[in-house]
Image 1 (cartoon, rainbow, N blue to C red):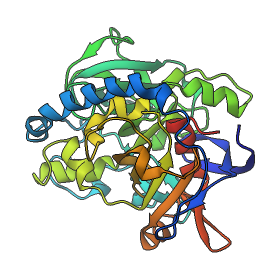
Image 2: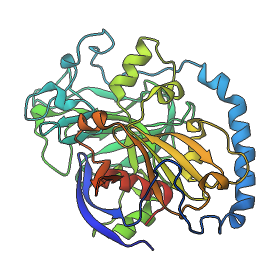
Image 3: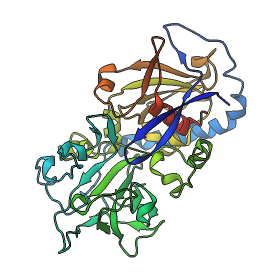
Image 4: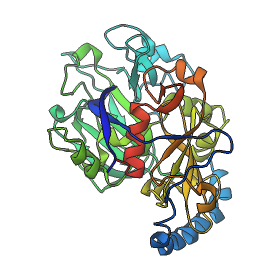
Length: 384
């Protein structure tokens, strides 16, 4: 067990949480090596990694054909402004600030210091009481993984998470602040692209007034199947009501950016989009494990797993999403401490322009994981 320090992090729609920092972080001057016993558990992982090698080869055999396929995706509300190519001001719902950008993805709130995970889409139709009547529809074919039916259980209010195994990687979409769930939409059930799944609303465990009712829409990836273990370890003091589909276990891409790139045919699918992202941080984690994250999303591998794994080089974007993975052999991490995290490079300008997330902290002149990067590493790699 690693000794940790506790800090506080703000996560927009996600519940505020205490985020520890790693007590041991190694840094990599050119040619440096550190002595320790990183190889001691490699033999124990041998048979598991043999299976991983076979699985990786099977995935990569189909990667070329998958990456060439153009997906079908729909805007999730009747607001046709995006489909008509109109500016985002015509479909976005701002916060109380009135700034249209506050309803977009990114570091768009509290003067750029607060992160917002998705898009807030305003209604086009209201009833006599001012309540929205817009039907919310599934963006793609998929399987309903989570329904949070009680509006007061989460900042998301009443919401639905759909996983999309028909695309690569199998992203989720999330539809929040719903007034109602459409009858017949159930967890484990299939939905079709364009199928009505609910009605737009303003439900939340906070206070969203009727005049700012909207759909909060996300596209992203789930970090770990073992979320409950992390949640229990954090001792939040309240039960986890959403299981592994809790918002703290979900990391969203910029839906507007993806949809714009897709509409302009710069990318045809999510695999191409992830390959197109620019890294804000590159890091190395010394571990022989193959995280369930990369087992679920093998399309994010930059090279196949060949033999034993000694560690990983991971690229993350400005929000901390680990979008590119390169397996490292035991030889490549020889002498480095098992469980250590090594910051390889940082795009300082990109992070300076994205203040809603804290990925890097500089200590004694060296880059170390900040609170948000630490949380991702804890969830994905099980580091404590």
